[in-house]
Image 1 (spheres, helix red, strand yellow):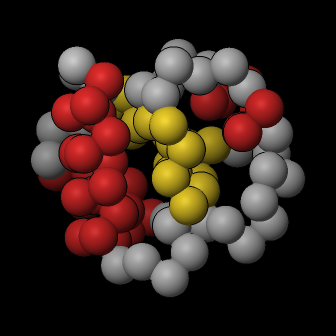
Image 2 (tube, rainbow, N blue to C red; image 1 turned 30 degrees about the horizontal axis):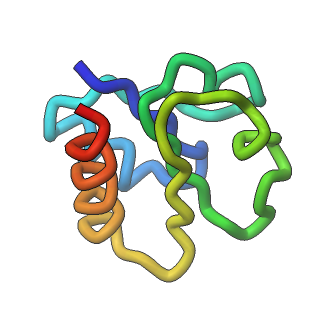
Length: 83
């Protein structure tokens, strides 16, 4: 089960990813991103949490200007490329 880190303010994305069967964790601090296959950030304060500096094995998706559905598609593509 892929683990997806999602910034707190993206609750609609969290809910949609959970309904798709992903293990979703809220990114409240830098350590929360560890162990995630993919992280979704708002992009408003890029790297304010240090997510892009953390050594995660997956990608970081900037959700700025995207709908929840578009973000979920990006997550699926990202996870698919890793497997």
